[in-house]
Each structure stands twice: as C-alpha cells, then as structure tokens.
Length: 222
Image (cartoon, rainbow, N blue to C red):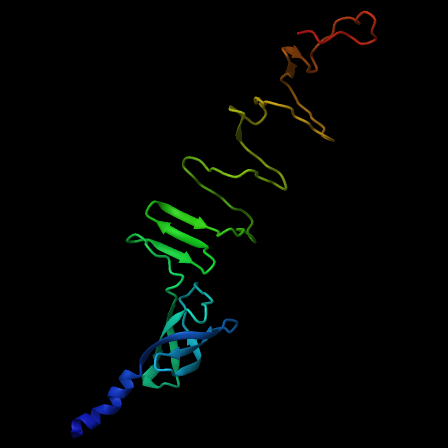
C-alpha cells in the first residue's frame, strides 16, 4: 500500500462507518427522545440510538419488521442517531402520484387521495375530545349514513326537513307515517293549529252538544 493510500485509509474507514442500515429490535418510547436498538446488517447490535423524528409527528414502530437508516457522527460507531424508520409490511401501496397517507398496523388510515380525504377506522371508534366546539363547513351538505344518530344534550337547527317536508323553527309542519308514542312528555305549542282528519284540536276549536245517551260532548267541529 502506498504512503498516500495509508494516509487516506483512516478517512476512508470513517466515511464508510458514517451510514448504516439495520432492523429494529427494541423501542423505548417513553423517553423524551425515542431510543431504539438496531441490529445492523453485519450482525452488529447498537443500543441507545436516538430517533430524530420530524416535529409534530411520532410513531411507535414494530420491532422485528421495521427497518432504519442510522448515521454515526464523524464515523464514530459509539455515537449514532436514527434518521428514519420504515416498515414495508404496513406501508400503503398503490397510491397515485402526489397522494399522501398515514397508516398503522391495524389498518387505520388517513388517505389524501386525488378525489378527497378518506379516513378509515378499521372497525375501531373515532373520538374528538378536549375541544370547546367542532365546526364542519361544507358548500353542499353533510351526510350521515348510519342507522342511528344520538345527541345527549340540546340539538338546535335553524331549518329542518322531516318526512320530506321542510320548514323553519317555530313552524313545525312535518308528515309522519305510522304511530308516534310519547311517555312523560309535556307537549306545548303556541299559535297555529292541530288537526286530525280535518278537525281542529287546538285551543280555538268548539264542540257540539252532548251526544244522545252519553255524558261526553260531541266530536270537535271542523
């Protein structure tokens, strides 16, 4: 080996030692900076490697399937930092150019498609919490495709449509088919009228005389 090659050899080894890839073997996720253990391709095991995650984004990768790229500062194998962790097993495949996605090992996904945002819960519940309000602004409509919608407190609407009949607050006029049953409900109405088969049952209606053989008044007048 020439004198020049001998002179460069330490630098060559240091450069070769700067970057490596390996498989994730353990995760310490409760530290301020996530700490990983990697098994490098040559069988070398490295502990206490800090994982530099992007600001605002964090994950707990799966040991055994996740892979990582690690950099050793100055080629010193005793001081390494993990630059990126990937897991080809759970990566969303077949995305179109320009699309973005988030996916976990349970199948929960947030997919920014070319046609809009699609969120899938993988059969698990979704919860919005610790917020004073949630606002949906849609130019056309908001649709709920579900067998039941529940509200535990006050429900307010400036307009409504029930049974194909539309109206506004204070002018409830809707078509109902079938039976309606209330128990322990005080139903009050101000103004307007209530009719059954064309007969007025509101406060302004009148009755005919007492029916023959009965102490009851006749049915309300139309």
